[in-house]
Length: 322
Ligand code: UT7
Image (cartoon, rainbow, N blue to C red; front, side):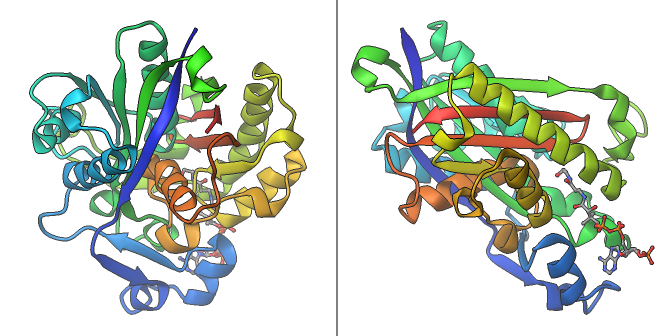
């Protein structure tokens, strides 16, 4: 049996780091409110020349270096984003060009904050069916470019960044039990109006700005995340007590706490980067994963669960023996 094994992780952040205090100079908010209600202290904001694709390419270079794998051997690139460089071509093909890969399959996936989980399931399916052997799975966003800086209820919450992983097809006999064990995704389009962008190619012909009913999203997030984590663990035949690390979508520290509590998971097992990166949508899970791999918390062979929930609504989880 073939499994998709994580060979390396990488991430990239824009150079400019903005504190809550700096934001409060131009937005009617305060460091106290943002920290207390969200746990966010900093976010990175893309500057001139920094785009979703450039951040994604930098994250991929770091992941390939960590894996010790040459870019030319990559046969699939899937990039999750809601903020592509252009309407088309896909940002994945821009990344392909930046990495100097002559030929591979490359496309974008749009599931907003759950995009990385969606991309992981798509790539895992393509690897297990024999279509791809070595893939880059990326979450990359420049949400700062769709924020309404006059709307304090949303503009303080988001940041820019990218994270990537290299997945490789390995026979389970050789993989030592490592690899993606299960993935589970959901969508419920009845909730489109709780988290959306008020523009688009085929409606207004504009890019639009992010709009969110935060309190309602919060309520759905805790319920949906706890339930999809339980589902994906059950599919893997594992209990919550067997999880070494939870790498959640980083929207709000209170959502992370409430979800972990619901599953009876110790807070020390939850990787938290929302304080440093804010909500980077599809980039947040691979960014947090890379932080915890590089600082030595996540070790080979450990059970890691990834989870995310976002606009649509869409939500999902993946269980990996790392
Ligand atoms: O990534 C996709 C998933 N997204 C999420 O999961 C986000 C989920 N939602 C949340 O994280 C939280 O609901 C928020 C952080 C967005 C908001 O926190 P809350 O505790 O639900 O606050 P609230 O919206 O109920 O607002 C409380 C008060 C309001 O004032 P009044 O009406 O009580 O007088 C807001 O006007 O806080 C006020 N407020 C602010 N004050 C200072 C809202 N934003 C700010 C701000 N600074 N930036």
